Length: 437
Image (cartoon, rainbow, N blue to C red; front, side):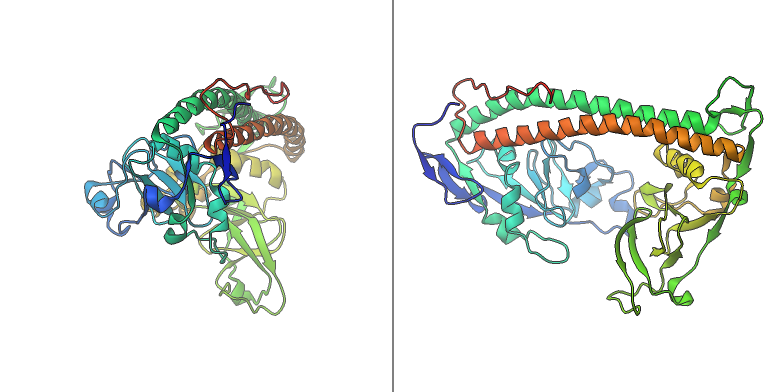
């Protein structure tokens, strides 16, 4: 490994030694930190038909540029935002501290993002690579409250390694070449994972709508996204399979609490005398085996089945399988396929741009699903369990390789940015274990 002639202690544990002629600076001396903001959402003129990028934390992608956003600002909305120049580094300052990204275009962000706009002391691309190794610094300087927060002042005082601008440019050229090779391997494996997931989706759709034995006679289901079904199967509307329930916890005197997000992913359970820090008495009771659907916004149609007693937001739809000749896992597969393919989303009403999208009960109840004999439903569930488990094992194997490659890429970037690898000569550090590739 090529190294510089002499080094000095940076005085920062997560940075370590740096070349002696490099400067150990701080972000406030090499950049301006800009906290984003949200133009009033009640005014649709700030968003409807907008063309200007408005970035939220879930849209920042590390070293992959964010050059498009789901929600955009109009000229009016943009005038009320803080516009950042291209190649500013976007850092999540609330919750998932240290998650970062950038855009090759001018952007605005919401208030959860503190962006770093570098001055002429820093090559913008070098700045992006540098920030990629700063997560430990961001985390150690965040406020440890209910939701971790990295405030602007502490971010400004974080250490920043400053080589001469000519060396910064050499580092960028070197890392662009090396990381491109690693990224190519990552992309290959991500494509493989995508194909495996598509295989799972295709398998589920085929089996839940056609059955395991497809040699029998078929008939038209009358529903476009389902297509043909076995002749001996029936079709039934949701309202004849399920019953929508709305049971408010306060009215029923329950003292068991489960905080839920995006369906029924249980985060916490509190039991006892019902004395809790927030008023959950208006939340809906969810019994074991109840279905819960998010019928709002871009998550319209996400469904899960509760594994225990709990509560969920009153805005979610809770419904129970009442048909005794039906298997809940069979219908859960149909619902989840419908969600992935946005079958339910098209029947919603409102404005998805402003977070007011809803799937009303009436169109929900009118959806038609296949209704195979109970024995076949059970066979389908067992078959899908076996087949999807095999595919999931392959996905996990590839995902592990992706994670290993990403860890290697980040470690390599850190070694170069801190000067532990000198970039003036070719380095052989990209020899990868064949098991990773």
